[in-house]
Amino acid sequence: VTETGKATGGEVYLVGAGPGDPDLLTFRALRLMQKADVVLYDRLAPPELLDEVPADALLINAGKAPGRQALTQDETNAALVEHGLAGKRVVRLKGGDPYVFGRGGEEAMALAEAGVPCTVIPGITSAIAGLNAGGIPITHRGVAVSFAVVTGHEDPTKPESQADWQRLATATDTLVVLMGVGNLDAISAALIAGGRAPSTPAALVQQAATPGQRVVTAPLSEIAETARTENIQSPALFVVGDVVA
Ligand code: SAH
Image (cartoon, rainbow, N blue to C red; front, side):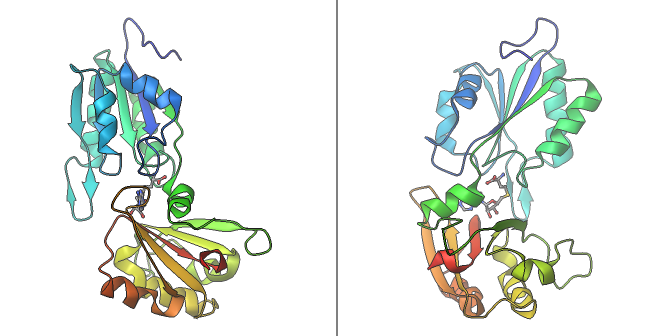
């Protein structure tokens, strides 16, 4: 796989854009952006990064926000395939790391099926670096020796929920929940029902690693109410564990 693209076929790069601060991009990602013909970017990719692409590059907003979408996943996959087959150097810019709830695997599979070369460039995930920006270390000697990262997109009270909150409740010292803002009541109740102490320190980091960052903390049993009072909105990281203190 070359970064210069091929004469006959294009190439698609699924690129991690980091946790929010545009400076937290890899050199590899920056070099690819500076040579891109087409850039599909998502809502969580820092908008400042679009200044790095060539002036004649085609910019496509593939952003997803809760409840509304610029492009559906199928349309995004189709656009990646189309531009790849047209011989373009395509950068698909995704918040954090492409493989952490970023649907990078799905896009890579769609490209593989279409015979379009694809490379996945890792990014710094918000799950770790977003907590860091909020002053919270995901591990700490003597306090937390393990962590789990889970999606809170599914309502834990629904039978079809795939996350096993009962086991997650006490499985690791630190628990980080992405996409959980809409389900905080149900998630914190499920964790307490699963054996996590109601007094466990918890926090929400909204718009981590950006100028709009806000951090709120409360015991696990009160964090959902605190989030409402403080009007915490997506995107935010929900973290439970003694590292918060
Ligand atoms: N691939 C991304 C995660 C995509 S899922 C990564 O590795 O970071 C989207 C969720 O990530 C959001 O709902 C939010 O929970 C979290 N997230 C991403 N960027 C964030 C940021 N700057 N601040 C707070 N949360 C963020």
